[in-house]
Image (cartoon, rainbow, N blue to C red):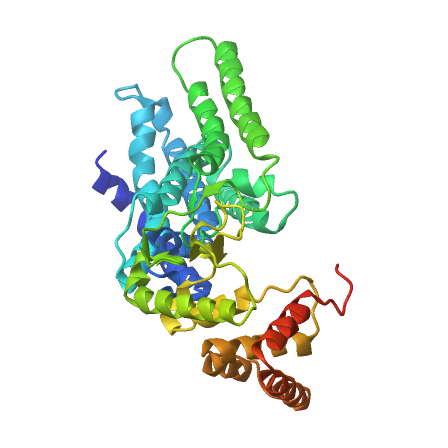
Length: 426
């Protein structure tokens, strides 16, 4: 039977419109952030719309495959003389179903890539390809169910069970059911899931599907086939469980998969390449601000490198005196990088600092580094109420008083402000 014949005569002909409409509805409702916030990073753009669609794709594959299996059983195809391999007959019947389930996975990312004018990368295809393999596994499992249970009963039950089993793993503890279910999560900017993250659910569902296919082999005794099928299925399930049981909320991934652009020295500043046009000015303003703080006595050393923590923060272990990892994408683009560096440079020794002391130090630093406009904009974003207005009045009076003192006294004041803890260290 040709693919077009299977398409015309199978369940996909009447189910595809509803499935594709539901897919587009999930895509429209599930979009949580504007595509511009993903900075043309293809793995994030591809993974984001799929977080709500994995369960639907698997449920479609399993349920419609069950219906197709029951249709073949009702037509007594398996009782006919074996002119063709039963695997080929099953594959011809399942091909349209698998293509439809793949459409659920591929259509939303394709729309997002086109809307954001982003080219897909090999890393961005990792999760969709794993999910496509899982659709085949779920289709095989659904087909096996349809061989034994009447399709009118099994199809709706299997659709609901498959969807619920996968979708609800996002809200259960421990975390391993989610990791082995094929319900992949979002991918942060600069991140790529490890191959093991994509392989674990394939190991579980693929092991079960392979075991079911072994039962259909025309060779060997029934007992031998049952034993081999059970060994393969149990090995896949246990292998997936033992691999993922100790994983935290976030499965294994790697970071830093973004081309970086760097400029200057003392400090050298690195940002993602798409922000390179803003980098020269940001590095110049940052170096100028740090020199001003050092001359004012607020800091004694400057970092050798300031780089974007959003890109490689998970790969590296935080900041050091020589290397600062900060959120730079938006500040560099908005022209506020020097202000953010100034705030980072005025490092308080306590985890809890009074609002008056913190704002006094930041306003003083903003005046010294020429970032007072950025400071006022930040305070404006926080809103104004009677408490805030009174705090601003006190802070302004404190800073004006300090600015009238000699440089050495100002240096003593800022060091004392940064070192003194009014609240106990938590």
